[in-house]
Length: 181
Image 1 (cartoon, rainbow, N blue to C red):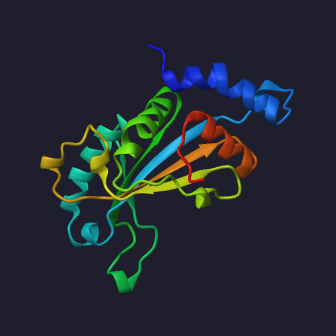
Image 2 (image 1 turned 90 degrees about the vertical axis):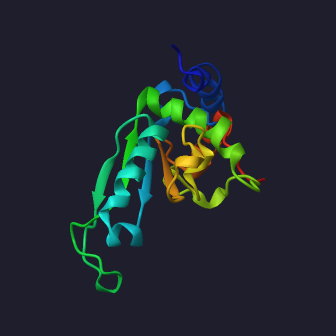
């Protein structure tokens, strides 16, 4: 089965980008490298590690692959956080699964966000990568809202091979990302 967004990139987006940025080499055309989805559980994870399992199960449903449990890198006494404590989950998507997730994010999940007016253009990091956040996981149709114990936000980092934010913004715009105007 062919991934719809990957086919669209190869046939429509890549030639347009090559022409707009006058790129002669096909390998210089910006493309998606990976998507990292992470959920930091913060205070809930510090108080009890039992909240990690439902969060990991929901992230596995959303991403289609088992997430990794992340640990604190350093101790912070004000937050009662010790080095090595389990505080979140993350998953890295590449290839076919990455394009399938981005397609579901653009066409299904983002339109279900309440009072959505477009994604902020300030999420670019200066090196061609885009970061965005979602306030709850129930915007994905894979998650049954009746079985959710606690709403949890997530960060989605879209890493591209583009060298500039302008190229990355144009790539994502051609793929269908709904940025604010």
